[in-house]
Length: 404
Ligand code: NAP
Ligand code: MG
Image 1 (cartoon, rainbow, N blue to C red):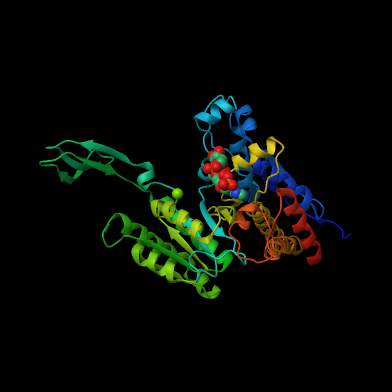
Image 2 (image 1 turned 90 degrees about the vertical axis):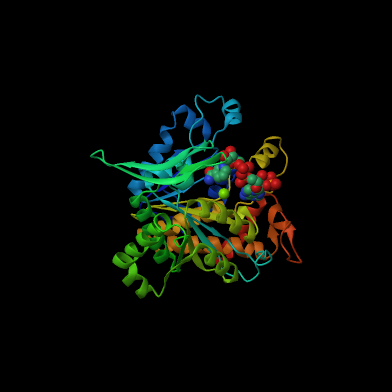
């Protein structure tokens, strides 16, 4: 047996809930600990511990991520009324992902993992499309009202000296109606642009950005202008050197081009567009369980995770002692992404190489016909076999042994 890989800097490890918490431990035991002298700073973001610590653990894990630069996160429960009862919570704690994103001021990039046998609904998408959603403002922080026949609706801005500027939205005559006020912030748009351009350099892919600037000449056009300014002043030269491009087009044109494309680029989207399009892209590539997610801050801090949730239904089967066949691929790729990043930052090529082999072994295993139930239902491979949660990881380990 080869010696274990020694790490220099710890990874921030954020444990989570339900079925993904079970998978988390199995991935470590079966695929990581035999090969790596794994150094992590462990934060238990399981709902019970978030409740016990008044959710301080989430904030602490984000601060540690700022310190060390790379984190790997397990899926976590975002409490709702049912969860408050189920876990006897002191409060309906906020989404950990929301808390972490706010502290790191990051952008989330979601990328599908492609395997032979699972063909995207758009068969020409031979490479992944990474969706980057601006996660601040617009309709998600809106103010809206229902108004009455005869109402005059205006935008009113009062500057710091008390001067007022007004613009009429609409005079309602002969009918009731609805109005909505939106905002966004230059610094948030700028952070979004930087995160996208940094990540593009990291993975060596083009960035596409789109909005409706022809119709929204102040609001959407401002996004376009900030992206252009950030690109021109900070990234143009580096993109040229890397042989990649920044491409802006109208949102409707972008949608048409995306459908006709082969993939292999980052698609940056405004908040609402990203919300809608990320679900479309995920579905079109085949399986939510094959979607990875990385939060990238404008100053280059990374938090890796799976895009799916805690797979609750499988967890309750598991608790009843029934066999499960839960797909661990996105969580494995969260670990490999974090280990690769740590290896690159710490100049530990053997750690980065191990992470790449882990990804290769995972894909090779599936392409040899061994897969979990969700992929079994989709795969067109003739020799496919459905295996349980743990056997899938053991089979990946057998493949991994042949690669290292
Ligand atoms: P989910 O856990 O993603 O599961 C939705 C369904 O998708 C599952 O029931 C399962 O379908 C399928 N699925 C998802 N991941 C799978 C995997 N790895 N392997 C096989 N099938 C998979 O979403 P949810 O049920 O809406 O949410 C459950 C909990 O997760 C919630 O408490 C939510 O707050 C949390 N959540 C967390 C995050 C995060 O931490 N980033 C993200 C989303 C949701 P079948 O049951 O039909 O097999
Ligand atoms: Mg959505």
